[in-house]
Each structure stands twice: as structure tokens, then as C-alpha cells.
Image 1 (spheres, rainbow, N blue to C red):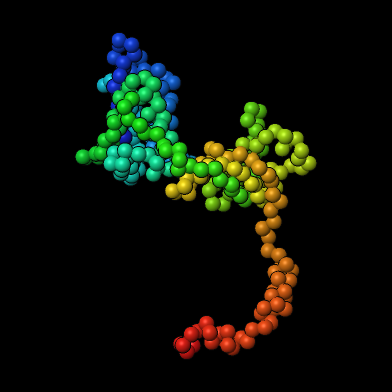
Image 2 (cartoon, rainbow, N blue to C red):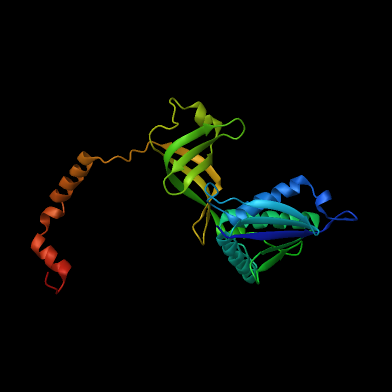
Length: 261
């Protein structure tokens, strides 16, 4: 049977002159904490993650999230490092945003968050209006990207966008102006692979792409198939230029240096 652990997010505060309890804790605040907890435990692969069970307890308000112990162990290490560095710049984007969300709630409502795990001698971190768990903007810079893959969805009623299924980072959503869709002459969904040029933010230290910041620049007609004729033409050009002037025996001898084959 899989071992289970939990993270505990305890909130102390008040609603005016009344102490905070589960009975006067608003559902809007609850939703934010639920979203933050999922990103703290599973910042990337949510599709295949194990179950997270939840309960709320008194004192003032205590959120308890249970899941597989291996993820609790990983989160405990993150809490320890954040405590030591007093920074969230080293975290990947979803985890950093979860801490920022908790920081925003604490500052806005004058709450004190205490976050720890079920592990013995667990690391613990406190977030209140005096803490500053916010990413340093200087480490994120504007960059240009090229993504290659199939378009799985396009358009939208409010914000229009492209959904691109890539091989290396999965599906990404790129904000796209409606004017682009108005000029399309054919259906591009689930057709051949395309290249998409986009602008967005990239972490200067880790290289991570902030996929929530991506904006469309242009669609590229991408042809990834093997073109034997094209490669043969390149070989012939090379042979006529520099390869044809090389003595193959001398060239191989130079590569070997002073060693015999």
C-alpha cells in the first residue's frame, strides 16, 4: 500500500474583530489556497499526478492536503531551501506563483500562514505581511521562441489563442490576435506540423520559459520530412568545392595525430 503524507497550511488572522475560523472563511480564499497547494506539490505534471485529498480543520483555519509521501518529501526540501535563501527566484514558475499567491493573501488580509509537512522535524515556513516572497523581475527577460508541432485548438470567444502540441514541452497556449484567424485560408487544426514564432519571458538563470506570457508573431510552414534530393545536392556542392581538394589519406592521418589505427 502506498505511503501517504500531508502538507499543512495553517492560517491565523481575523475578520474585523472576529477570529478567523472555518465558519467565516470565504470560499474565494479557499479556492486560491487549493490552487496554490496543487502547484506546490505538482508544479508540472498534473495529468498523471496521484490523488490529493483535502480537509479543513479549526485552529484558526487549517488546510490539510494528503498525497503520496514521495511528493511530501520533495516539498519539504523546497520549504527548507526557501527558508534558507529567503527567495523564490530559484523555483520553477508554477511553484513560485503559488508562493506569490499565498503572499498576496497574507498581505491583503493581514493573515499569517504557517506551512509544514507531516514529516518528523519538518521544515516550516511562515508567510505574513512582513515577508516578501515575490520573484525578482530582473531575472525574467523578453525573448523570441520558435515552437514546432501540431495545432490542436485555435480561436476562442474572448482571448483568442493557438494551442500547439510540441514534442519537448507538451501543449503550449499562445495568445494570438483575432486578425490572424480572419486571414486564414485553410483549417490548420490537426493538420501537418507547423512552426510558430512567439515572444515571451525567459528566466535568465534557469532558461525556463514563462508559457503564460507567450504572444504570437507568425506561423511558419514547417516541413520536417527527410528530403533526400536536397541532401544529395548539398553533398555534390561540397565535393565540388572543398572536399574535392582534400587528400583523404593525409586528412585521416592528421585526425589520428601520432597514433596508429
